[in-house]
Picture 1: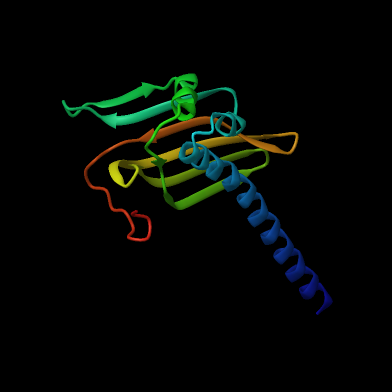
Picture 2 (picture 1 turned 120 degrees about the horizontal axis):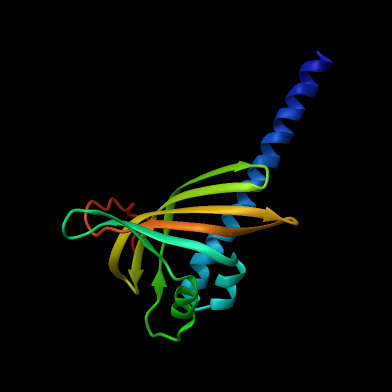
Length: 156
């Protein structure tokens, strides 16, 4: 009986530990979207390693699959530019996977400029934990305007 209690306690402890790690990872992901909403390029840069890889995958007008390499510094500059509009990218369906110091996060998103819908897709992040700090080293997103199923509680 004591062994069963110990095993149960260890199971609950491990589950709590895993949820805590997921929360730490999602804190970094949410920080990216908060930085975008508030034009805070410093907060944005703090979420990433020095020179992360960024990409966008999409289908062009000719129906061809394209993988476009992003320019992280240009993204940081665009976020930090004072603007009258708010860039809002709500996310849902978060899927977090962690193994040691590597994490992967897959989220659905919709992108709005103020309350005006722009596009939707998926963001896929890879993070590394170095010295107890999670940082994004790879980000790829998809973008489309059609077939966007956005939950009502996400829409502005």
